[in-house]
Image (cartoon, rainbow over all chains, first blue to last red; front, side):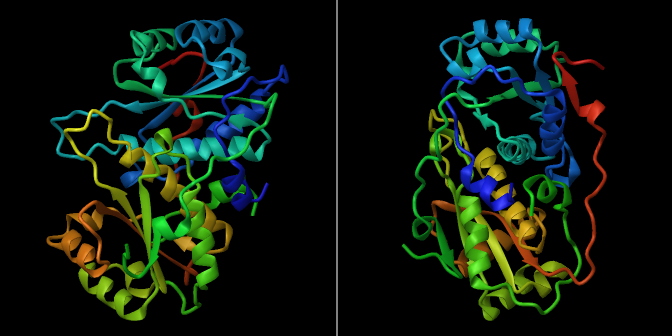
Length: 176
Length: 176
C-alpha cells in the first residue's frame, strides 16, 4: 500500500476482530517498522512486547475489561519506554520517540491490511499498569505505555474527521 | 512508494539540498499527512508553518547557522504544539502527538522522493526559539518544536543502524 494511502486510511478501530490469525511474520514486520522510527539523538528508547499467546491475551482481557479490540485480538503489540531519570539533565525523549515509533507500527499494520487501535487510557485503570508489567515480566527500567490490539476488522470503520488544513497549517507566517 | 519501504528508507539527511524546487502541492500533501496522524483523544495539538519564502528561509539560516540542510533548503516545515497548562489535570499529550505527526510528515516526504531532517537541537541555541517564534508570528499558545528542512538530496545517504530486533522486541514476555 502506498505510504500516503496508508497515512490517509489509518483509523482507530474500536470494534471486534474476526478470527483470522495474524501471522508471526506479519507481526515481525510491523514491529520492525516501529524499531525503524527516528529517535532523538538515535536514543531508541522504544521497545516492544508482542503478545500472541492465547493465555496471555486472555489475561490481558481480564486486566483491561470492556474493550472489544482487546477481548477479540489475536495479537496485541505493547510499546514500552526506557525509564527516564527526572534528575537527568537530558530531556525526556521517551514520549516523542514512542509517538513516532507507534505511528510506524500503525502504518505498517494498515499497509498489511490490519485494523489497529492506539490505547493509552487503560493506564488509568486501578492496578492495570502493575498487572500488565507483571504479566509481561517487564523490568523496572521498561515502562509500559501503549497497547496496540490489531487484526482483521469485523466491521471496518474509517478515519475520524480532523480540523481542516487552514486551521492547523499556514504558509510562512501564522494567521488567525 | 510502499509504506513499509518508506518506513525502511527514511533517514536523517544532514547534507546540502540541490536547487530542485519543492512544489507547493507536494508541501501541502506532506503537511496534510502530518495532520492525519492520530492524537490522544483526537486533541490534534500539532500545527504547522510551511516556510518556502526565500527571505524567511534566509532569516532562518541566520538564526540557525552552520546547518547545511537549513542553509540550502527550498522549504522548511515547522511543527508547533499547542501550549500545555502545567496546572491542567489533563496529561501533556503534546510530545506524543507531535512525535506521531512529524513521523507522518517525514514518511510522506520520503514517499515523494525528498530527503528530510527532524531537527530539535536548534532549540538550545541562545534566543533561537524566540527568534523563530517572532519570524513566524506565532501566538503565545503555539510553541515551536521541530524544524524539518526538506528537498532533493545532493548526496543521498541511508538509515543509521539500529539495535537489532532481539534487543528491543520480545514475544509474550520480556527476556534479558
